[in-house]
View 1 (tube, rainbow, N blue to C red):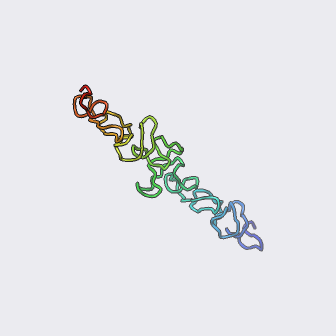
View 2 (cartoon, rainbow, N blue to C red; view 1 turned 120 degrees about the vertical axis):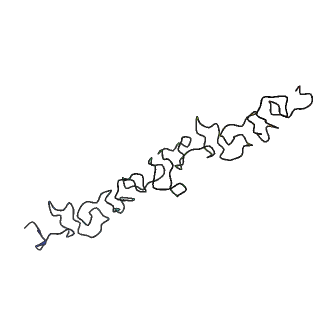
View 3 (tube, rainbow, N blue to C red; view 1 turned 180 degrees about the vertical axis):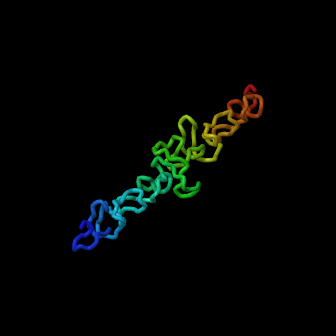
Length: 184
């Protein structure tokens, strides 16, 4: 009888014998995290059970944007998939994930969207980005280079900056204070 194994006991999942046409595997143990599940079907990514030494995670769903990727690898910043299961300010939150290591594009390597003031210069978008809120230095809070005539005094470089092109007022076009005999 095909249903009889060994000493003619009834064949059953977990007896260590693979019954043809009924079981795909039978390793004879009750360990569900190895290559053969306790239901006598081969373990696979997506079955909801983490295989020891093979899978980092296995959440049993087909949602690619949560903590466990569909490949049974743990989601991480830089994998090219944006996690949507976390809120801003939460550890592991991603606003973007372009999967590259280019710091000067729209998505930073920490998976936060690039913005003026983050300390990273975005090519073609920002002239500078010093990552501070000090308008009195060479890079303004608008991520533009400080220049004479921008209306912001660049400390140590400009004596004044009124942002206009009138040489006859309290600040010259060269961002100097007018003096007697300067022609204005």
